[in-house]
Amino acid sequence: METGSDEYYMRLALAEAAKAAERDEVPVGAVIVAGKSVIARAHNLTETLNDPTAHAEMQAITAATAYLGGKYLTDCSIYITVEPCVMCAGALAWSQIATVVYGASDPKKGYTTTGAGILHPKTGVRTGVLSEECSDMMKKFFRKKRE
Image (cartoon, rainbow, N blue to C red; front, top):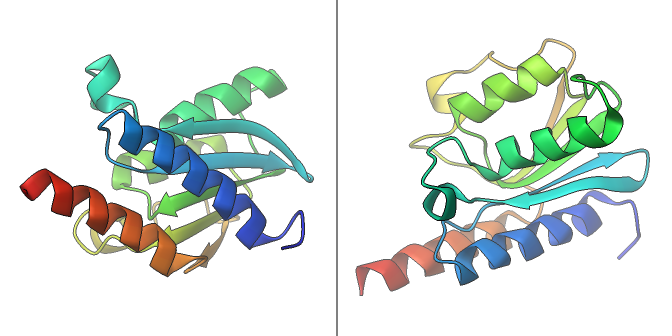
């Protein structure tokens, strides 16, 4: 797999999602890239921090803006294992991120269902990257929860 490809960065996001699952968090991971450099990695921490806003994307945005020293991510891409919710899509819009790439769609809580058009007008979107692997991780997590 080529370094710098969508699949490469999504695999890094999947590794973050696995860290979340190990902590009994919903397994969502995110990676933010500037150029070809990873500047932020994060996973869900809502249970750990008792914070409903501690989604992987929010954690990654905070880390990336701290790294860059500014609130805008205009030259960055975020790779997320699952389609962002409306809250995260709104935060990504405010950050003016250049590109959002996600794996699995979320027909119940994803922004395309509940808040389509919320991203910044200049933000590009690519979907379905390693979608089966991303979806399988979520299904496995919730299947285990129901047992």
